[in-house]
Image (cartoon, rainbow, N blue to C red; front, side):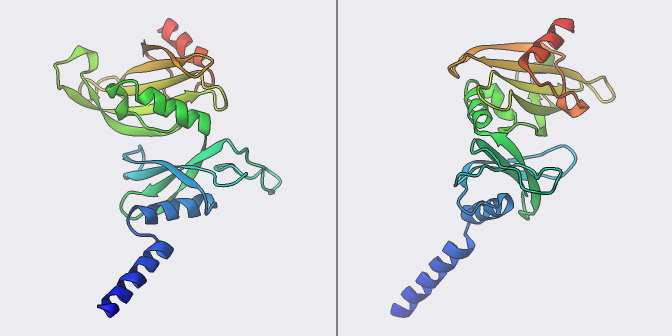
Length: 226
């Protein structure tokens, strides 16, 4: 019995050092962002364009230095604001490092709030600047339960505080070889961060085509001109 107990303690210690289960994934994400004390905010597995499935781990800094900032042109480290979180992309099966991207903590909170507002928004990524493959339900008022393969992306504007809108954009083809149809749900916030309105927009700017809007008005202007 004492020998078995000693072996259990050794295994537990090994898990604490190397990481077991989900903690191993967290440890790898912390290594990518270079912050051993970073905290995991959320984890999800998605199917991005241009590659295999990845696990997206949203991290917030554990100290006074933010995450996800790049070096300046002179080669020195740029001071990263504490409100800069990051999301790490790891291979879904191998946990291979596929890089990290900066995202403000305000965007993280606003996207989570917007996604929670309706079940239809759960198919969109929980982070900004990521386009994934998805299933678009009931496009163009199709039959209930009808879905088509499509593309989904989330745009949070602006980067800092306060976030004024979240655009859940999607694209799909009604049939093979057909022109891609696009639409978006625009969730707007008031100055206190509460959801003010939600409406559907036709033909919004699509990030996968290189059209990255910088303000909410660019999305609504595109809607008016469509």
